[in-house]
Length: 68
Image (cartoon, rainbow, N blue to C red; front, side):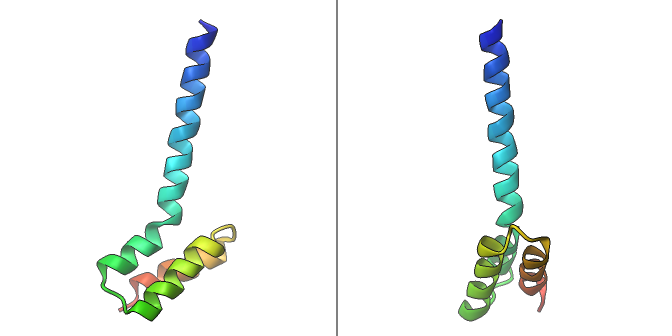
């Protein structure tokens, strides 16, 4: 019984980590879909990977990736 609870807990943490990684990489994906220039794509990646710990940096990357 204890083994089942530990497996469920590990699966829950893996799913949580995958969701967080997906949220962090969303601006990069949007920049790729909207076919941003290489320089803008680099700025979006830098903003989302390096400054993802602050909501402001991630929001900047998200806005930059969606801007036409």
